[in-house]
Length: 169
Image 1: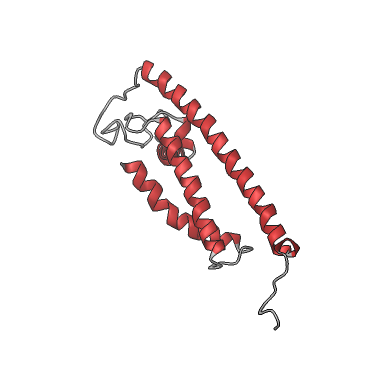
Image 2 (image 1 turned 30 degrees about the vertical axis):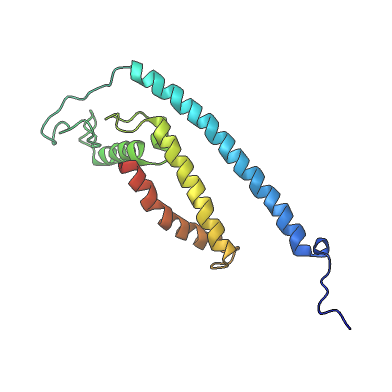
């Protein structure tokens, strides 16, 4: 009687060698991301510790036209407010300091609503969530791996609501 099926050794398979090589690259990259994030968490903890010692600089409140209506108002009310371009640029800068995923970590929250340590944790969640969605898209062959722009756009659309939801808690 003849054997039903005989399969060759898997070490001869070219794809298994490529998968093993890429698995190592992915593991090293993930380790570097986690190591960098651990150092970033320590830095954020130390910055929060020093922020609690410093007094919060409060703005003089006003009517919302000549002075801010609340402490969280991102509008620019400085000495160059008569120039529209300067006012728009400074207002955008204030919004980015408050809401941007990376920039907001470097600046203290004016309302002290979110600590830097929490912001770094949100950055870690966004990074790992992006990695997970990209691996799902590539692993299920929903998108070809060389279409990295499409993968990035789909990932950004999926991750953005999660980041905003976490930030608003």
